[in-house]
Length: 223
Figure 1: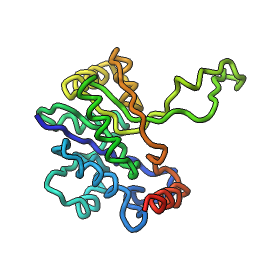
Figure 2 (figure 1 turned 60 degrees about the horizontal axis):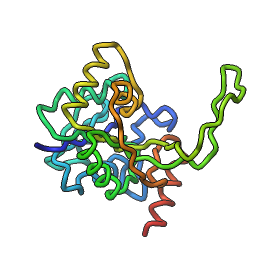
Figure 3 (figure 1 turned 180 degrees about the horizontal axis):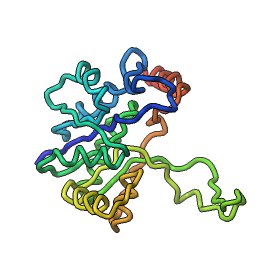
């Protein structure tokens, strides 16, 4: 069976303050979506890539992503709906590899490590230990608790799951009218244990204009 990567790129780019998709912005001469997709094209364990995009972006995306392993699906109103649209086009697979298209600096070694853990544990996600002390507050913004930082991770993507398991839990969520903003949360709420894989702090998400020069600086440091 094949492993299918789903690259999510159907966001409205509101915080980037641009009319076109932020994934079409360039980082050191290459678009964000190209960098994100190419990372997965280079992984031998990935057999197929589905790029989820807004209808108005598919023509632009397809013009720069012309590999025969890539197909396109129109996104939904939410992250979960976008993933579900992609899942609905997959007949069968061993693993589904879900990645934010706005994370163009993901390292291939982190993808491969997470695939290995997902094969062993059925669910795995890449993330990094939290550096800051985290406070839990109440509705009036008063601190009520300080969790132990040693047990806290900031989750990133890819998030990888046994495909049959994932299809079952996302269909259940849809039937129940639940909409999760994170695939790990979707799994957790179905009682699925997700293995956390230590990744890299350079796997940043391109969200605001300030993130572009940061990403370029990271790439320059990698040379």
